[in-house]
Amino acid sequence: MTERRLQEPTVLLLTALADSPKHGYALMQEVAAMSAGRVRLRTGTLYGALDRLLQQDLIRIDSEEVVEGRARRTYALSDSGRELLEAEAELLQATADEARRRLAAGRLKAQGAGA
Amino acid sequence: MTGRAETTSAQRLLGCVLRLYPKGYRHQQGSELSGTYTAATAGAGRLEVLREAFDLAAHGLRVRLGLTSDRYAGAVLAAAVPYVAGSIAGLSGYMLYLLFGSTTNAHHEEYRLYRSVDRYAGGVVMKYSPVPVLVVAIALVLAVLLGWRSWTRWLALATVVTAAVTVLVVFELRRGDHIFVMTTFPGFELPLMLLAFALMVLAVPTDAASFTERRTPLVVTALAVAAVLHLAWIREGFAWSLITAMPGLVAGVLVLALGSAVVLRNSILPGVAALTCAPWLIQPLTGDLYDYGFTGTQYVLLVGLAIVLVIAEGAARHRRLNRSVSR
Image (cartoon, rainbow over all chains, first blue to last red; front, side, top):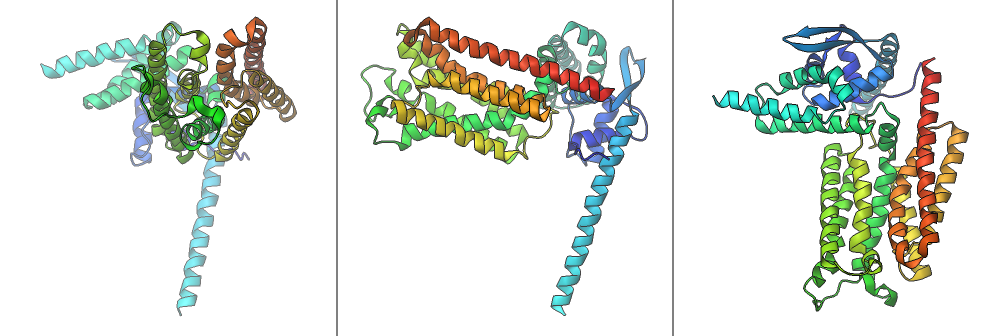
C-alpha cells in the first residue's frame, strides 16, 4: 500500500497504541519495554512526536480525564494510523522472511561445500 | 527531609521549564506535561531529572518558535541537516586548509599562522582564534556523517558556544578598529556563519526524520562550497572575499530550488535551499558596509528578503498540500 518507511520511535509509538488507548507515561514505558530499553522517549520528545502524529491524523485523542488533580489524555490509533502500521508491519515481515530465507540458503550452501 | 527538598526543587524546575511554552499550549497541555514529567522522574537521579528537564525545555522553546516536527519550519530544518552540515564541512575544511596547508600563495598572508608572536598582546589569540571553532565544527560534521544523533546535538551546542566566545574575544581585542578591519578577519565572520549553521542543527526537532541515510547531499554540498571558496581565492587571491559574488550565487540557488520545487511539487525543497543559503549573506552584509557602499547593502538585503519570501511561499504550499492530502 504505502512504501513510506517510518522511524523506529514512530513505529514503536504506533505499535504501543495498536491494542488499546494509552496515556503519555504509559506510552513511554511501553516503548522502552518493547525496544528492551534501546529507545527511551523523554517527555519533550514524546509530546513532540504525539503532536506530529495527531497533526498527520495517525492517532487521535481517545479521552481526557483528571487524575490526582492533573489532566490526562489518552491517545488511540486512528484508522489511517492502523492502516499505516499494518503496511509497515507487512514490510518488516517481508524483510525478515527474506533475511531468514537467505540465511537458510547460505547455511545449506556452506553445508554442501563442507560435505 | 532531603527527599521533600529534592521534590520541591524538581517542582520549581518544572515550573520554570513550563514557562517556556506559549501560554495557550501551557493552558491546554501543561497539566498533562507536568504529570508525565513527574511520573518519568519519580525516583530518578539528579542527572536524569536534569536531562528530562532539558528535553522538556527544548520542546517548549520549539513550540514557542514554531519549530516542532509537525510545523513547516521543523520539517525544513530536519531536511536541511545534510546541506547545512555540507556547508559547514566545505567552509571549515577549506579554511583549515588555508590556515595550515597552504604556504605558497603570497596573497594569503591574511590567514597564515605566524610563528613569531605579534607585537600586540592579543596577536596570537587573533591569529589562532578561528581554529577551535573550525575543529569543533568538523567534529559536528563527522557526527552527522556517522549518524550519532546525540553527539550531533551536543557538538552543535559546542559549536554555538565556541563560535560565540570567539566572536566576543575578537571583538574585544579589536575594539576601536574600523569595521573593515573587523569584517575582513576570519575570526569574526567565520564563527558568525558557523554559529548560524550550528543553531540550525541544534533547532532540529528531536523526533524528526533521520538524516543519517543522506550522505550524498552532504558530500556534494561540501565539495561545491569548497570549490566556490577556491574559485574566489583564484579570482581575488582572498578566499573570504565573496562580497560581490555571494548574493548572486545565493539568488541563483534560490531560483533553481524554486524551479525544482514547482516541477517536483515539493514544498520542503525551497525552504531547505533558502535556509542553507541564509548564513552565506553574513559576510557580504557586514563586509559591504565599508567596501561597497549602500547600494551593495541593498542588494544583499534584497536577497535576504527573497529568502524570507521563499520560506513563506514554501510554508503556504506545504499547508495547501497537507490540506489536499487530508481531504
